[in-house]
Length: 475
Image 1 (cartoon, rainbow, N blue to C red):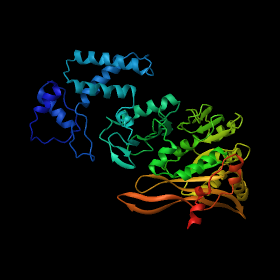
Image 2 (cartoon, rainbow, N blue to C red):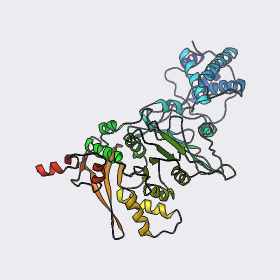
Image 3 (cartoon, rainbow, N blue to C red):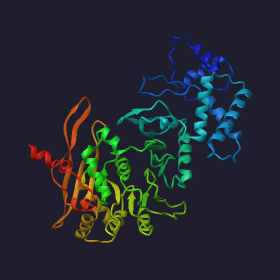
Image 4 (cartoon, rainbow, N blue to C red):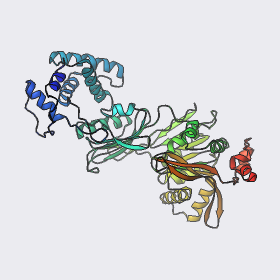
């Protein structure tokens, strides 16, 4: 019988666990002291509300520290299979030398936790492997929340300390050549699978190190899956596919977490395989499936404040790379001016995303971001650039029930006076809210876009029923 099992059985059935003590227990080998330490380390809480603390944190820390000490510092961590085998061998050796008796499940659990800390991302490792979790939010060492099916829940895992969280952050950002410290207390990064990471540390964060991870599916979500999820209708997909193939310039807008990048990934699948695509991002997260793709990533300044490469720099450079299409992950600053210039200088079929509350607000935000370039351009000139560069705005929103839906597909038709004119081609109509779910449908407005001549010139023909024209006539 393992040491931990014997301790647990010695507690008795009616014993109430004591509150965790802040003072460290004096080292002792007696069963009573071991039992006391175990009880103090444990917090019993109701499922889904509180956190179950690991009953052998001290043992894990002691074994892990010795393991790190005895490992070869020059070992190549990137060769994870070989390193894990070495860790397993040293782990077994340490347990034998210190006469630590654990059952097989306990030993396996302890080893997996230690290996996750050395090779992976610590307590987040199990959350990252769970395909039902779409977002991980670490609010300091002891509070972790996750998003599942659009709802936020508290996760039953914790870090050991703020230092533990900092080690994991360093492990994420170091391979990317990025840094985080008091002089630069926040950073955008990505995991090897493309998941987006943002980290904020004190003194900016008042609750300790904060990590936010937006997970991406290991297999990119397809347009067919978006139809199954109810995010878009087959008719709208048919229309968007024709727009991408006809090389129209598309802006995908929406709020945080509304699914803009997922939709951009899905729509990029309609780009023909024989075209050269250049992607530009702050942290590379697009998962384009075409063969001829060049990926560019911006870079923050180094510790001396030099070496910064901005999205704007990359957009300008991309024009010299013979792109057929330029796909910008997100426009959030003066790079909007260069993106509009690219769309207006022969790089048709370009796509990007931006934050906004709706199609009309998207135009206003682009105008504001162009003004950030400091060119002192007249407002009318900026609006003319926007109206001539952008053909289509696809707006996506996160609904009350956590679902993500396309709410507007709008054509930018031109200018009337000093106003950019737009026409809604598809619009989401909510008809109710039943059983905690938003009920509605993305329906066509019955209007045919002005750019359909360009679509048909590309050899693409859409039936009138896609725009709801035939349906209206029947009624």
